Amino acid sequence: MYRTDEGYRSQKAWREIQAFLPKEYQLTPAEEPNEEWWNWNGHRIHLDRFANPAARAKVILFHGVGTNGRQMSTILGRPLFLSGFETVATDMPGYGMTEVAPGAVIAYDDWVRAASDFIDAERARDPRPIILYGLSAGGMLTYHAAALNGKVAGIVGMTFLDQRVQQVADETAYSVPMGRIGLPLVRLCTKLGLGSVRMPMRLAGKMYALVNDKAALKAFYRDTTSAGNWVSQKFLATYSSYVPAVEPEDFDICPILLTQPAKDRWTPLHLSELFLRRVKKVSVKTVMLENAGHYPIEQPGLNQMHDAIVDFANAVTKTAA
Image (cartoon, rainbow, N blue to C red; front, top):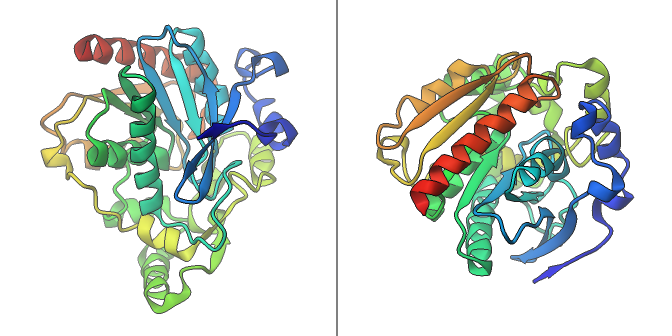
């Protein structure tokens, strides 16, 4: 089911983007992850894997709507690998190096099902505990996948955004009219059979706040596999209205960690708190990342994120053991 191919070895965009990271977070050719593909429902899901058979736990990394798996490998994949974990960064359908099945129109529901099925596929390889990490929209994806799958040891999110809440839609959309008028119109168009019509993601959300460095943002915009991507009306419609398998009041599967960038101009802390304060049956912890933007390229936030996830992973895997 897994096979290798060219993947990111032939793409320049991620190298341009990683140049804005601290030197210790930039991957040299010898440090790049192994690239694999996982066949799922006709799609070839691209994976970046830092394999460590001796690791006590595995961390699966999910990107958001303005990033891809390789951008997770740089800020967390290799650093967590160096700290003793196995890591796997996914490219969800429509992003990164993943090849979408011919004729398929991707829904957010596909992301959730793919994430849950991938957890099962990884558990079939070995029984080690699995922890999920998600950046931006990937944060809520960790929750949705865990709620559907029920077999993870912990989840870590950069944000936890319930897009069904109007305040969240208002503050994360490109503008309030987009949240109040645009998203309902997108849902209507999808119901009328126009779900395959695509639009730039940067016009739907506040992509201009993805990073706090203007030059880095320009590099992201040039990358059509991440921030420069176009998405379908169906994806936006289903992303903005997805109903989780378990609502937060009943979630009892695993502990939750929020790693919140202190200088996040897209999804500030209070938006995640709207969701997390509803979680009562498991522990919820928040760690603030100093000086860090939404996609963190700054210190000391990057190191703080790494350290918080290591501490969290060690704690939950001891419990799982």
